[in-house]
Length: 371
Image (tube, rainbow, N blue to C red; front, side, top):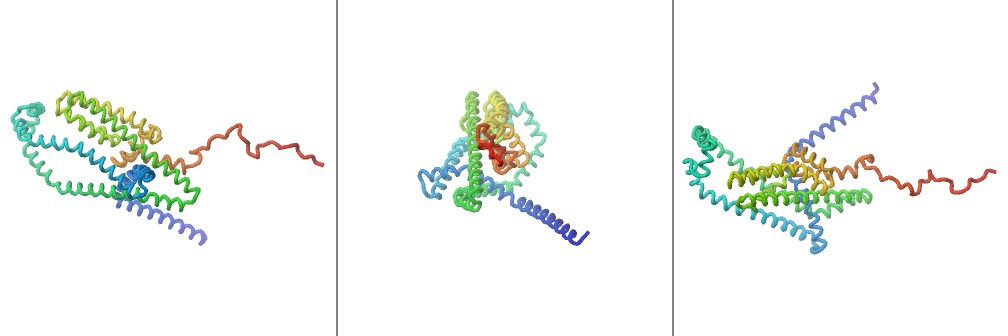
């Protein structure tokens, strides 16, 4: 083997080693900054969803981008605050009443009186508590220990929410400048393609939010009807809680079922069973009919693609993956359509009656005679 071949082999080996090291460093960087990257992805998701509203407000009423962005974010905050107030005020009121009746209910449960005492007697809970009082006392003392960890988690969650809001605000505010810079750097031809991709991505995210909101409204309305028919108190508040929980794909209906069925069983066993049966049937209908059909029309995805995307993303990335699976699938479809191989995007067939290319045309006139 010559020296030239040795140098070429060594160069290729160095290139491979460099690529492996660069990949390992990139993966390590992603893992080390995964929390910030998740915040950035969620912020971009909300920024894309709110950007059309900001653009419309800026075109119609407010000329300054900063004022239009601030007004849209304030409106979104007011809507969230109103929903939280409608949900939390009656809930806190009920918790206060329950706390006032707590000692009385505890005495009834210990004596076997009242509905709670009869339930404790029938299920054997009273006997279990008497036989395992020491273990339950130890378990209660252990529950007090992770209080610092719970407080740290609450602080981190609040910090994450604030960071997501600030990032989304800045993304919407600076989006025209960023778009102009990217299109200018890409040139005319590539810039038009990027503009088309951006419009499709924005339509995908907006369509997903609209479809998901429609499904939640359907779930909340049906829950309100069932709770009202069974006589469960605070049917409107519980239905609103169920609708908000249903915004989470796949598992949202399950969370809502736990809330509504719990309220139903507190009212009466019959109401609890009816509500539970309703949610068992509704969850199957939502997961396998409403979500694929409505979200497929909103995001322009095949219903099978919608269902598989949510299942795979939920398995790989948990709750966040389930939330972002459908818009991510729509974005991937858009990118494949624009940048994928040509055989994945075949051109439209030519018109048979149209003009033929020059190579297929017949002679325009008589052939010249040879002398």
